[in-house]
Image (cartoon, rainbow, N blue to C red; front, side, top):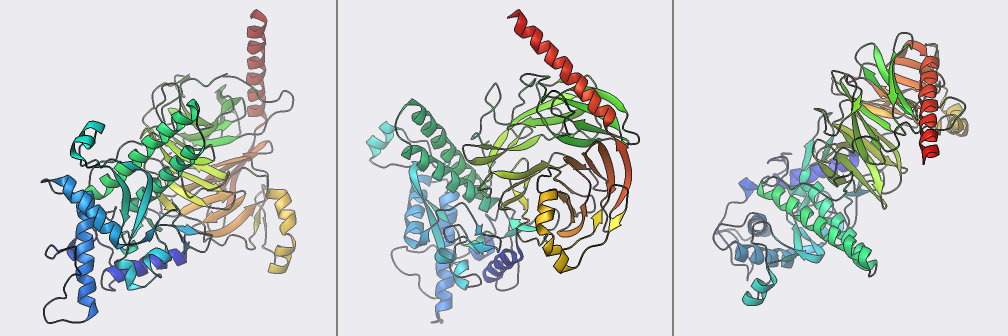
Length: 564
């Protein structure tokens, strides 16, 4: 969340709460206007009357706001008596009062935090940022196909034909931005809450259904339409649950694994032991701390447990083309991913697991142009609507609870692995500035002046543009720490650039140590305001062990092929 966007949200909240800067209500924002919603029921066929003795426009605006807020509550929380009548009446009233249609799942555009013109913060629909209109104007989402309200009985064709009334809805009201305030996330960032996320999911699901309907006929197209039609209903049910206070349904938009459950473990990896290239040792593709004095280093064909003191090999096992996600705090299990499929291995029993161990397991993956966040613990798959292009950076926090996913333009952020709620948006961070360089032997090269810094931009790109050592942690002191392609960033401030080669990196859970592997070595760094090298060890033994496992796997596969 950029500074401009944060100010915009706070301006909306002050407009709503009488310029006192209070954003009331629960996290979802569904009840943040409750103390402003008192008032008598109104006749929707005529303009609300001003309060007795007052003739200015302000009381009329307040009365109109109360009417619309009551209709909005009736839409999502209909009364027990004749709920279908309340929902349909509220839907018509809110559609008539709408200031425009919301068609984009994006809240902001670019890196300057401007509201997206077609999004749920649109100035065209809700008024300019800071305008009192943003506390009163409603918008709407026009769905390509109607959905059923979870508070009403699911309509059947015979019931609709008998009553002559279709209880399904094709228009969803969008409340004023002031009613959807920012939420203070762990780590200190102010970000949109779950109410905005639910609207983003609904609009994204509607756009996917529109694309499926336009794709043409055929059996495969029909299967895709049915799946995306169900996803639209799931997104609407989750939005209703958000404002009604119920439990949201499980998302099922990204099925995976043998049993098709989103986020379910895939068991034993296909082609276990499948090596990378024969010949020269491969570079590490992942790493994680294992206690205080050891680490798991992942190569393309194997994972090796090594000592942080001297690099000695302690254990090894095949891990074909897997990305290491995290290691359980007690060191008993490790989580892996491959193209969105999730795996877990018991490091003590040395076996792959069919059921998720007691640890969060989540990963980001792309499917058909969409980026999803899958979680084994929650059993969910959530679309990351802010990520518009190919993933350029994605990593899981050491405890597995957060996932960092950004596209090549820097859109995305850090997400809660279970809910998909964004905790941090790095779009407004200014990272391209002169910083010192930290050498592998512990030496430090002072930062150049601005002229030399910009003159060396192309050389830096050649040296660091292909690095893959990106990782992050929300440290125990509440500060964000990132290693972004060799650039160490502490709470948005770049501190130094690592001069040595890194193909993988990981923080410990506390954020006090950073492990960087690559170029035949592991380097332990203290990620402090003045970073320093703590230790350095050779990975030659680990590379030889990984090559041995790869060679053995090639022999087994050759033997299997000869028997066939």
